[in-house]
Image 1: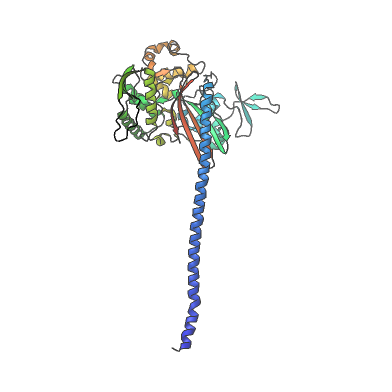
Image 2: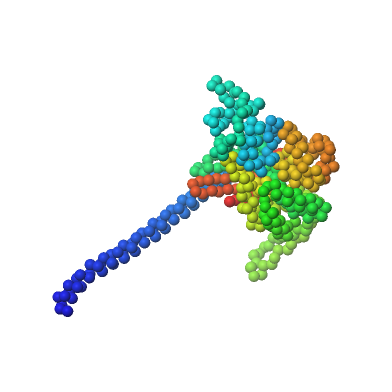
Length: 439
């Protein structure tokens, strides 16, 4: 091949090579640009989350201080609810059954119904506003023909709990803003829930009743047999760490304290000796022992030893927006007693199974407390004198006044969320903090 032909072939191949190199460089630059933009976006997202979480955490901590400062002023008062349904059986009602219950009792403050008309609560049932603003009684609403979408109009209707707000709230939840964070504060009655420690009682005299009450409670809250067995195993592991007790007596403990002595010279670390110890004996009163046990179990029940995520899964979902789960009805803070004025049916039955006739006693309590709450244990025995023997056996498991509460604070800022749960006991104006869990 002549030299002129070779030069011509080299000249013709160079543009293709240059194009290939150019395309390679463009691909590399595109990958670098994509990688850089992705990292910048991720960094911005992390920075934004850190800022949002800082705002949410600050709002949550500020709300906790506010709640604790004002808690002394809160004086929970039970209300009379003779013309309203009881909250006891809401946990197992389907959406359709829940709406029929509202229809039966004529509940609804002022709602726009599925037919576009306004209804108002009235003594004779649900009323309809006429053109003059007066209420005409009407009871011909057929809830059986309502579609599921129609239930949305009842989404804001709540059946009153023992204190007025929906169970288990002591007061209406409070919502406000702190900076960019939206904060919600809820105060719940822990004595209205089933004390999970009851399932760990090892007293031979009541062990059978304790197991039966626990299984009955779990079944009524919708847990399967597998879930109940798993929860039993989890509680057994906790019981190995610390037993749960109901009966306490003053005890004496040996306490060692360091004896401090004044020295005129400073000794080196190599020649220093452990300070002498003074051994003394200290009497621990019953209230102190109860407080100590409560603190321990508040930590154990909220540890990884119990699968709380499974217990918190909704049992019933529907447009009525009820949040029904097994954990909602479980006392996970080491409580020991149930308030008969504020506990739902399945918790009452679990409490009175220790004495028998639990079904009949629970029904009597539910019907009577709607009109007037029980003032004390003696009032319960007097009103239900037919079951006084059974009630006597349950005295140490029940109360008529709640003293154990939880404060739940949730703060949301942007995409971040911070929460705190504080368990406290309240006796009059005296408030004692038991445990705090931050999330």
